[in-house]
Amino acid sequence: MSLVYAAILAAGFGTRMKSSTPKVLHKICGRTMLEHLVCNLEKTKKIEDIFIVVGYKEDEVKKVIGKKVTYVRQEKQLGTGHAVMQLFDVLKGKAGNLLVLNGDVPLYRSTTLESIILKHLQQQATATLVTATLENPYGYGRVVFQDSKIQGIVEEKDADEEIKKIKTINTGTYVFALPELFDYLSNLTNDNKGKEYYLTDVIGKMVAKNKKVVVYELEDKEEALGVNDSLQLALVTKIMRERILQKHMLKGVRIVDPGNTYIDVDVVIGKDTVIEPFTILKGSTSIGSCCTIGPNVELEDVTLEDFVTIKHSVAKNSFCKQGSVIGPFSYLREEVVVGEENKIGCFVDLKKTTLGKNTKVTHLAYLGDADVGDNVNFGCGAVTVNFNGVEKNRTIIKNNAFIGCNSNLIAPVLIDENAYVAAGSTITEDVPKNSLAIARKKQLVKVDYVKKLIAKFKSKKS
Image (cartoon, rainbow, N blue to C red; front, side, top):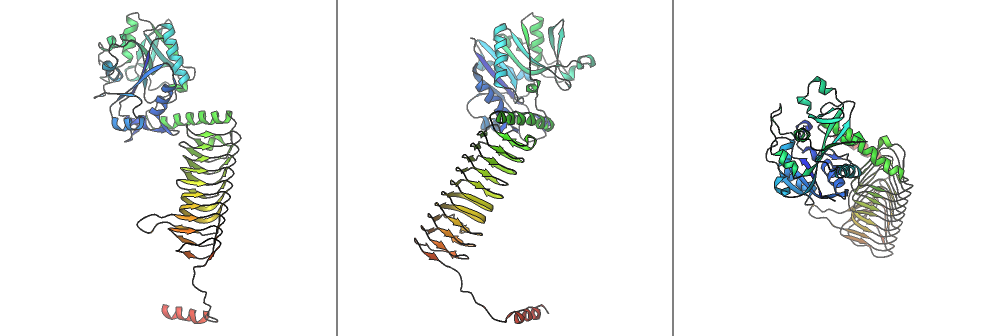
């Protein structure tokens, strides 16, 4: 089989986005548009190498995509034909075919890309043009046919009123035979309103020379949708999100309200998990089976084992073991490990903390930089005081310890096994095994003193 190379055109300014971020780096469901495209090209087994034509803010593009592709620079953005010309040096002398795509079409499936390539190869075509039929084709180049035979492509800004009535559009995706493509590119002119070198003109020239140009009509026309502004970005994001939700539901995940659930493309969810409304699952989050997530939950780069429940909470870069119950209104900030059968309750803030099995932090507590054992119970208002103004220090709490309400554990400090910290204590020294620590001032009661106190306050006020 002939070799197939892929070229993504990603050098443009994307001025209609009105953003300092390069258009192809705007994110859709956890990946940039360009990453979606590269990922699906990588899944397409027929692709030998991937080239990206870069220009505007190329360093940002390279930082996101990395070294898995070859970059070709387009110094000046003079049109799609000019962009493909920049590939001449890297493809010079190579046989095979070149798949050309714009960098702002993230909805292509890898199976579709394979079908396009397969048709081109089976037809032994000089060029294959990918088309779609749209009810509202505004903004797209129109594909002109005569007696069912393609005649050429007319860009929107060069089209007359009759051409604009055509609903078959050029998607900007092609497969060309090499090295014939470069023979035609070398004869391109920019005699048009945009003063650009159009790749579409190559199709017209090939037709005029009776070369075999075939058309691939997309079955799912949504795959052709490109992104030029924030409105189109929102539309494409909606379509991508619906695809992701459908995939999970077909695998046994129950999503109660798909219209109010947001899941990134790389998220993994086990069967029989229930996703309640207003849940946002981001990044590389992985959720086990038989979990209940939501309502009102945001997870980013979080791993949950089976049978975890989390409600009305936020977690990032954390791990929750089997059977844990999180929330409502819990915050797992980063590098948190919640042990098996833990209960993390309302208004609990955890950071860089590891909790053992069957530990309970049920309300109004902060645990930062702490290593906590099994069967530890934290009372309301417990705090590990981890920052001394210069550096962070760790608190170590061993198995079966009890931390009373409104206790401050001043790190670095050790609360050993079976130790008991009395409510209201500020602990600055280690507490040995099986010991009770009380660190608070002795209570003083002044009988019948309230009247004197109020009189004193009034005297000061006057």
